[in-house]
Picture 1 (cartoon, helix red, strand yellow):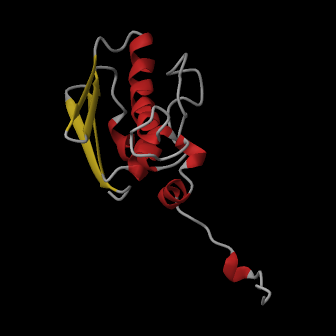
Picture 2: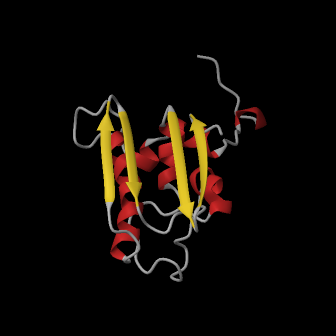
Length: 146
């Protein structure tokens, strides 16, 4: 057997979505096909719901709506909404979020700074909309690409 050389050519730097797709187990456990309760699809859904719950328990949301139809999951809360200038960053820049200090969020669950990024990277199509002060910002992605 020939010896494989370990050189600079073996070293790679991945962008956030490549890393999540190459190593999903680090973020959501196993991918699976949804047939067992520990499949990653349920972790992804839970990550978004956790953000809704954070808003709800802090008194900012009155309702959370979950709809699953024809393989499409829609989750809506009526919380404060992501600040409009950071909507894209919050779902596409790893380790970006509003839960790193205790100012805006007193309590939080989920993978802070990672959850919605994993959902975005592992979804064929991902759409996020935020409503604040009578205005709306929407961003649509395909496999993590805006």
